[in-house]
Image (cartoon, rainbow, N blue to C red):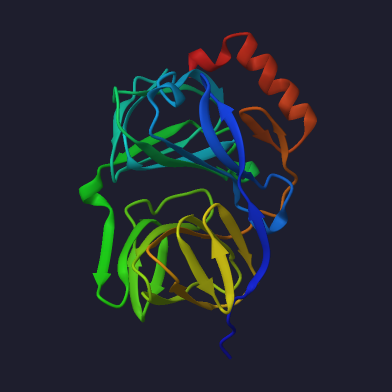
Length: 282
């Protein structure tokens, strides 16, 4: 028997800053089981150069994956393993920090609008001390589906079934199954979405407003959905939304800055490893 997902909680994004003063709207879910396997979603949006020009100078991570998606803008990734990649409008980058990575994400753009997202995805305990991985996805590699009824659907990772049509993104290998998509819609566009009923699902509206099974979700809000195998979405105006789903990780989460482990002892070891230069040897 099919069950429809409904909205069980709405979480508003909160303003903050990170890196070298980059302005961010953030939704953190480190201690929210319904967020898992995701940990945090940052929206970076500004027309002012001063709000993003400092970028994200070299900094460490351990125990997480990051998926960065750019609507508008141009950044460059560098890490201690020698990876260099450019993130430009419409493209994405994925990194699994594993046992440790030191990387920077710096703007190449000198002016214009910056609008993008960085998504933190937890790694299960079995992956937290594996070697780091990195891959970028240029705009033309993102899987797209469009129609007058649907609008534009861009699948970044994992798989959904959209109006009875399966769509799979270029990022298919994450620690646990996780799907992320971008739905850009005009007023009255609609979509019927199916996915694994046992996965958590949430939807962030970054432009306009959409209806989810009778509940209106406005710009800057994250809708946490109940369990189910389908959900019906309708745009109430010209809108944009990120749709997340994934297999929950039923493990303790201990978060300290850029590190996410399973115990405080592991966090203390991570800090010691970083301060002693171990990250530079990977």
